[in-house]
Image 1 (cartoon, one colour):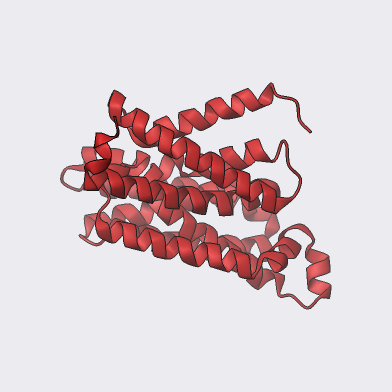
Image 2 (cartoon, one colour):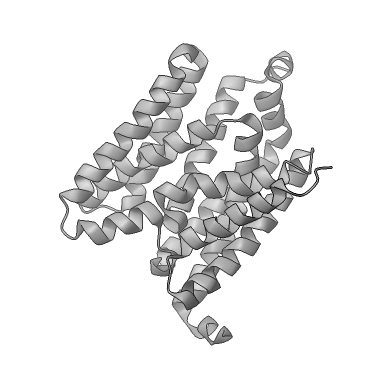
Length: 265
């Protein structure tokens, strides 16, 4: 069974999934606790537009996804601060518009069918060494940033008035948080695809938050749950010849359903 670990592509996939588990477990609890899953979904699906455009013109798809994710984070941050009444509508437009643009450009690109499945649902086994280095670098930046501004981030997201009284520029902190979300989404698109990125950001925190109150505990448990399901899903998917990302999300969904029947603290 473990002979597969001798293969470089599988070792690389394992490291990438472990790294993705950490970044999803770090950012996801903030998203769930703040109840901004719709914002994250809009950024991730909107990123598909940049991914499709970059792929069509021969650039790195992840570069395109990164540009659209950052653009989306900036737009959403501005609208949430200045035009809150239009936020829901703009989220829907960015979500649907990004997907529409991405689908059109992927469709008119040669070999679109294979690329479309990979972009939408991910294929961690096909990531290169460069992908691995980029993912590790971005994850390190995200985790380090969260550690450094943890208290300020907590105050901004969950007690904005208190943060403002302390002289914190809450709009700047919120934009930086959305930038971290955008970077996390780019990492996760490489492993889970556009469609399932939101799932890995939210399912494990949704389980942990049922039993824990302190955010740092929820983050820790979310990372552990992500790692367990990622490793299990990778091996299971390989040996039964199924796509890795859907298997991982299915395992997490099963855990969430089981948690519904377990008594909360």
